[in-house]
Image (cartoon, rainbow, N blue to C red; front, side, top):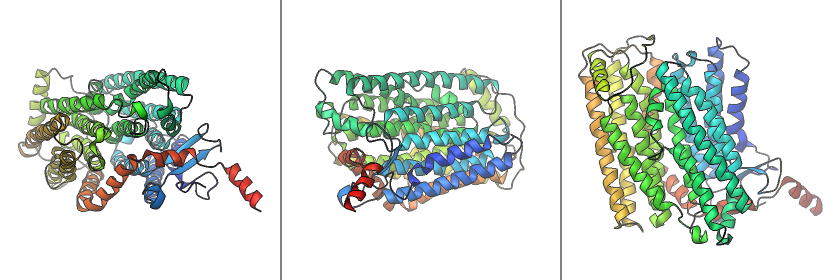
Length: 553
């Protein structure tokens, strides 16, 4: 058995496939329930999400290795026992384990929030929620492009249903726009896959990375073109300018629990760009090393600038949350580009830390927005007037308001909002500040220090934080301190998920040192792609191991 392999088909543990099986079994099981049996569905969904969190944490702990693996044990699950690169491989490493934990952490608060009423405003909410998680987890685990496409489609199909969940004219309009954009992206995805297979003859990511240095000069432009076409699909999902105009409107119109989960969907695109960039375009890839890094950097900077302008010009908090997603994605893509251009390990580790914190914060922001805007009087009227001036669409018909007016509701919401504003703007002491400071200090001390790109990133990162701060303080004052109405009618079950996500952010601050150590080790592992390649390519099949055992007897 390969010494870098953690799991294989012959091993006694099949935990690696659990993050895919748990949601698909739970989602399929709930299709047999009537929609009126929401409490039963809620129970099944919560159990599935808790199980996924337990399994993901276990996989994360197991992915930490020592010795030859360089702290990055590769887990491999060979479905059907077909040899690599022909079979379907699920691959686990530190990065994929981290993303699994992040998806699981988001799922429980979103589900609890939905139980307050949103899960009853449409059909099959819980099944769609589970299938979305199945697609997300599968995208993080798969080791080949074809199954990445399959899991992308599962994820998108479920997100279409969740996007339209709750109905309403504006939601349906934004939902169809969202569906159309993602269908076009899927077409690019399929074309890119076909071109790669036609030229290189493999769809396995590790096998492709292994073949990259030996590709002929005649075929290399075609491979680059294929990967560039493939990259368009990932950049659309990551929300990179100019492919991001659909995102603020779509996320604004989605139901709050759906939007809270959509915060991880952009990170799926970022994850694939990160994975592909450090496998196919690693320093050992010959003439392809660093391919596309300049485009990614320009796209990331443009996205940060567009998101900053958008958040300043937005009048609704839900739209601001959509632009905050763009700023987060743009920052991560720009850092990936810098890391691919000799930016070093520390800046990538800091970016991973920032990614986790910003995703948790944005997810909480989407949940908080609905409560903060619920039942607004004079402030809502003022915002509606401003929205008319900006040409925003008419508001949806008012939905039935449920819940009770809890004591100190606005105080709790305002404290959570203030914490999220500090996080997203990058002010001390929360992880937004820590992540940005570590990124900038690593950048100035690393191989990119003193270059034009480093100063441009420095300036845009500071300005995007300033724009976020101005926008959120403005809307926060209007919403929480200038209103003359009593607090919104909410239930405790709606506030608890927001508080839980804010608490996770505080834990990230409190435990920043060990978390950063994990992130830097993950970034270091990405800079050593040979460990990943060897873990996948040299893995033995079950039948081979049995033959060896029989021969030894």
